[in-house]
Image (cartoon, rainbow, N blue to C red; front, side):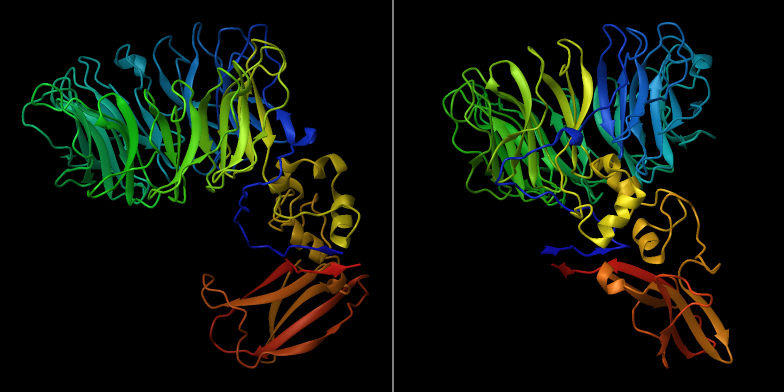
Length: 638
C-alpha cells in the first residue's frame, strides 16, 4: 500500500526540512563536487548559492595559479562556466553578489586596469560580462568601494569617486545591466568617505555610515533610494568622542535601524529609519574605578519579525560576554544563555528565521571548550546541540536553516583539529555528519546552507590535503516520494527521464519534478503527464491539433469550454479542475450561472487513452476567463 502526497501544479512553496530523530543518511549520488579541475596549487576561495537554490557561484584560481576568477556551477549538472572576462596582468575577481531573481551576478574586479576595482554584470550561466559604469581609471586610481544589489534585482548601488581633481566619494545607482549612473548621496567633502551602506528590505531607503559632518567620526544617514535629501539618524554627544557608529542593521520590516555607537563605551541603539529619537537598548554596563562604564556591546542581530534585538555584551561582569534579548523599541533586557563556567564567554549567536529560537556557541560548561546551544528567543530552557567533543575539540561555526528547523555546524567533534560538518535539529536530537570522508589531515573550512534548505555547500580539502575544493551535499527531503516502476505516474517519469536523472535530487526543480518545465513550453511536467505531452519537446498542441489545455468558444449564445482528460484519470491519481476569473487575478472554482456538465465524449478521430470533457453556460456580456488545473490526488493502490 502506498499513499501519494497531493501536489498542486500551482504550489510554489518548498517543503520544510524537519528535525530528524534518526541519523541523517546522505547517499553518494546526493553528493557532488562543484568546481572544475584545479590547476596545481589552485583553490576555491569563496562561494554563494543563488536565491533559487539551483546554482553555486564561486571564486577560485582554477585555471591559473594565483589568479582569482569567477565561475558558476548548476547543482546536479556537473557543468562549470567561467563568468569573468579575461583579466589584466595581476588582475583578480575580489567579490560578487547574485541578484534576487538568480539571473545575474555582479562582481568587482581589477579586470581592465590593475588595482582599479570596477563592477561588472554577467548572466549567472555565462555570457559576455559588461562594466556597468564609466571607466574609473579616467577619474584617478580609486575603484569602487562598497556595492549592493537592490532587493528587486533591478539596480546596483555603489560608492565611488567620479571626481578626477579631488578625492570625493559619493553613493550612486545604475541599472543592473549597465546604463546611466545617478547620484543617491554625496559626493562628500574631499577626504570624507562612505564606509558602508545597506538598502532597506522594501527597497525604498538607503542607510549609510560616513564621516560626512566631522572628519573620521562616523554617523548614520538615510536617503531615498532614488536620491534626494539626506537625514542624519544617529544621535549622541555633540562632541565627537570615540569612533561614532561602528555597525548597523535595518529591521526586516524596513521601519527601524539598530546601531552600535562608540563614545566612552560601545552601546546599542534603535531609531526610526527616517530619523527620530534614538533609544538605548542595552542595560547599564559595569563601571570600573572611575565614573564611566567599562563594558561594551560587541554585536547584535534583529529578529525576522522585527520585534526583538539580541545583543552580546559584558553587561553584568566586565570581560564576560553573554547574550541578552530586548524589544526593538526599548525595555527591560533579559539574559538568554545559561550560567557560564568561570572564564566562560558566549562567542557568537544567530536568531532563527521564525524568530522563535536563538542558537549560540560558548564555553558555557567547560572553560576553553566552545559548544553549541539553543534557547527560546524569549528565554527558557537551554539545550546543548552538539555531541560530547573529543579532548581539545570545539565548535567553530554554525548556521540555522531558513526554515528554522536545522542547524549545521563545523567542529572537530570526532578528531582533534579535524574539522567536519554536522547536522542537528534546532531543538536538539541525533547529530549526523554531513561531509563525505576526508583525506588524512583534510578539513572543512567553510559552508553555507542553500536558500531552499535542501543543500549544504562547503569548501574542504576532501580529496587532496591542502587543496580546497567546493562540494555539495543534499540533506533535504524531496517534495514527493515516488518509487519508480510502482505507480503509473512513476512509470511516466521513468519513460521520460533516465534513472540517473531521477536519482539526482538537484534536478527535481528544473528537470524531473512535477513543477519543472524542462522544455520551457509553459507546461509543467504534471500538466504534460495529464494531457499526454512530452516533457522534453516544447509544444502546446494536443494530438488532435487543438491547444493543449482548456479551449473556450461561444456557440449560439452558449459559452462552452472543452479540455482533454485521460480516460483512466482515477487510476493515475489525476484530478482535473476548472477555475474561473473575471480579472485574471482572483480565481475561483465557483462556475458562472447556468453552468452545466456536458457528458464526456470520445474524440473524432479517436485519441487513444483520452476523452473530451466539456462544460457550458449561458454567455453574458461580462468577461470570464477559464483555466485548467491538474493535481495528483491521494490514491491507495494494492
